[in-house]
Image (cartoon, rainbow, N blue to C red):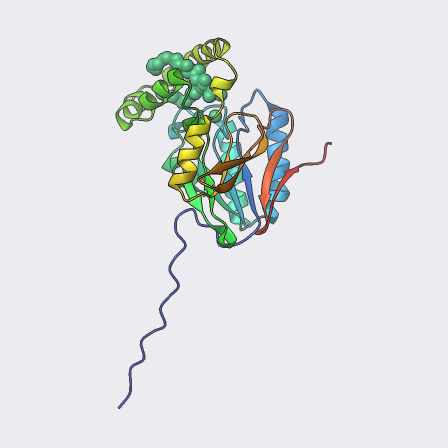
Length: 263
Ligand code: LP5
Ligand code: MN
């Protein structure tokens, strides 16, 4: 008679967005477009260099200057960028994308073309038992009521379906208009109004049990400490890539701001 031994339980698959190795790189606010060839060159060098050596790459929004819909994937510039990402994934680096206020229409088609995983905003990851909360950051600018009203409107599935039902050229024209309206609205806003609100940060850190927070959006790179309910939480604000490419590197013990050597 044979005794049946139960199969050893397989380890649970990693949760969506959960990295299984190190190091991890975080970037945001590249605002890639044909109008900024120097940034595209820097991104290409980053993808072919440091990103290849990383276990995972987290893109925390505004990778693109704007994204009109996944039916624009064939556009040569978009194809160039998604191919770079696809090849990075093929080389072994896992890629995660959390959308920004410029590219929140990048969806499943983009994810397939670039071979990356889409993440919700916010997403909590715990590499090396270190809880890290990821966000683009725009949702935390709660004092900017005009923007939050706009955001609420354009993030509804109904609004997006209606927008995406329009021809691509019409959508691009609307985006140009929205950009103009946004730039003119920003001229009348105080700088402090366009930063994240301390109360929103505290509420988010509390809700997620006091992790380290990483976000972009404000283009005000810094390392802050927040005292919330007796917990000292670190908040890293990522830099944009307008002047120079930068990223944050987590090696399991600490966070290191990094950059490419100047050419
Ligand atoms: O992007 P950034 O940093 O310069 O400014 C943001 C806020 N502005 C925006 C608007 C985008 O730049 C516009 C382009 C988005 C493309 C997305 C894809 C297509 C969208 C499809 C849906 C129509 O995000 C800016 C913040 C700033 O960050 C700092 O946080 O202040 O917010 C604004 O300036 C918004 C204005 O205050 C209010 C918006 C006016 C537009 C009103 C039209 C509403 C109806 C839309 C109908 C199409
Ligand atoms: Mn942004």
